[in-house]
Length: 115
Image (cartoon, rainbow, N blue to C red):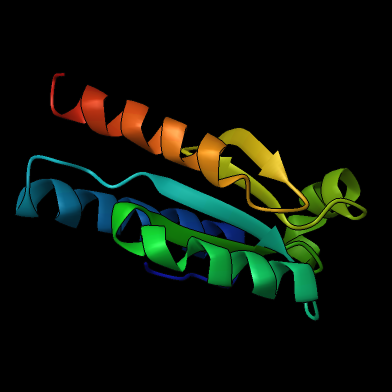
């Protein structure tokens, strides 16, 4: 599991760079699980613990919604963190739903292997 913090442009560049390296290293690309968070966030800390068994199946990207460059995400999610997106699509909020996460990861893994 890889973690990113900082402004959105740096996240995009870092994620894209990882994407390119991942593509060249293997034919399978890990999906990006984005965690919308703030500091402190005890539920986010709990969620990260729940995610540990899955850490080799995605790249974790953290977005601190309290940073000025993330004000759009702050307005959207200020009362709902933690919020998770998988490859840019909303997945879940408040707590990790492991069955939902597993289902979506399997779907993406099958698509990437042509299965």
